[in-house]
Amino acid sequence: MLRMELVELECQDWASKKIDIKYEVRNNRKGYKAGALKKGMEHAYAQQCDFVAIFDADFQPESDFLLKTIPFLVHNPEIALVQTRWEFVNYDVCLMTRIQKMSLDYHFKVEQESGSFMHAFFGFNGTAGVWRVSAINESGGWKDRTTVEDMDLAVRAGLKGWEFLYVGDIRVKSELPSTFKAYRHQQHRWTCGAANLFRKMGWEIVTNKGVSIWKKYHLLYSFFFVRRVIAPIMTFLFYCVVIPLSAMVPEVSIPVWGLVYIPTAITIMNAIRNPRSLHLMPFWILFENVMSMHRMRAALTGLFETAHANDWVVTEKVGDVVNDDLNVPFLEPLKPTERVERIYIAELLLALYLLICASYDLAFGSQTYYMYIYLQAFAFIVLGFGFVGTKTPCS
Image 1: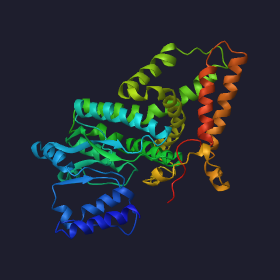
Image 2 (image 1 turned 90 degrees about the horizontal axis):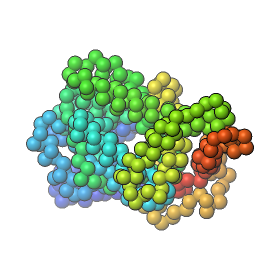
Image 3 (image 1 turned 90 degrees about the vertical axis):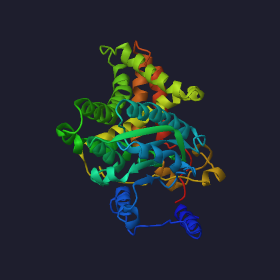
Image 4 (image 1 turned 120 degrees about the vertical axis):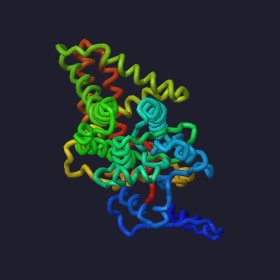
């Protein structure tokens, strides 16, 4: 049975108990998620509410979620958003979901928590949060101009002077995408949308008179420029292009801080947050370097607003199917159509480039970069042939 059918049956069950509950479905996908949220807020019963809780379809809040979150909004009228922590029910399905958990744990513990504490601002995660309706209306409501309607609203509300609160003690169960195809689509949407929003709101942030220069600096430089534009581009260029190429050009010398200190610092920060996943850190580094190629392409797509800047592909989730029928590609023979879907040419071409650079360094170079480059080439080959994650979920 589909999730929507289950939700409808659940709503009918509660309605039979005299609970005021509504089940609404749009007849089109105009505006995607932003359009759905905007349409939902237009209903008469929604306009009577002071707060709105938002969850994606795969999220499973506890029955006391509102009892824990609403008091923050009631007792502090300056807070527009209470964001809670995501918890993952399928993080141990495969190596890719474990790596995702490590990255998202870092995101919540470091980026969201520090943003909440230092600036009373961070990007809304799009789900598992409660908004003050008056803050949404004052900020201009939901807009579908990018694929990150959640971040769009958060930035506009932040520029209006509203404060955000992240509560990491409140956790909501959710599901991670377990196929490489779904994960690629998700990361493209998040990265492209953020870069595109930077393009559209950069000047608005500069000319805004409602917030301090310090907050403008945080938004423009740290929140947008460094994290959403520079980070994916520089990660890919430095670790997947410059370092391998320098192995073939002996005149190029890479400083030790760039080659060792920065990666080590980033690794330690993640390791502290995930001590039980310390043995997975090498895989995390190699996987993130491969994904940096997709994030760089997505960031440039959004920044220059090319033809695919506003493409919205729903992230497929396996659901309970994964518990009953978990087959990883290494053990499952591929059908011809599946083989085509799971071969990624860009990854394989870059793997060939890395193999050439590593082999040259091994045979003629004076560096020892070949050890790292061979490992990175292997990572690109593995992902290039789709040997990661679970099988494609049936839709």
